[in-house]
Amino acid sequence: MAGTKERGVPLALIVARADNGVIGREGGLPWHLSGDLKFFKAQTLGKPVVMGRKTFQSIGRPLPGRPNLVITRDAAFQAEGIEVFSDTAAALARAQALAAESGAGEVMIIGGGQIYRETLPLAGRVYLTEVHASPQGDTVFPALDPAEWQELRRDPPVSGGEDQPQFSIVVLERR
Image (cartoon, rainbow, N blue to C red; front, side, top):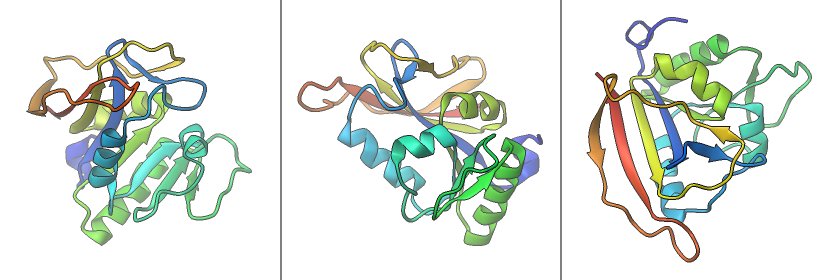
């Protein structure tokens, strides 16, 4: 796959990650942070979103207001309101074309773990919600090397709501 500079429209990952690296548990999120969901919507609206099949199924429907591109090895998988791809390169190429057509400033990678691992080397930006907790989980986000990433923004921790952990929004850019 080509690097981000060769591709045109920048590639960005958006993820909520706990202090212990956990991003998922049993096909869902180990928390419910309305502030993080609002941030996610604001960052992805109008931009192509690329995700794996399990992430799509955990959401349960196409995300409105953005093209939904789903990567799966299941050749029979289909759902209304999405485009399905058998490999990451094809999905990214289509996302790039859609972003260029619409004038979207970024292509957004929204999960899950395998898709993040495949696309992190290509990304120029990471929108990271640091969840200040260490829940049990079965999906983790790869470690981000501080030598490769610089902080553009860090918001102070805010309350996640009743019985929910605090979280901080951090925006990182590849050095």
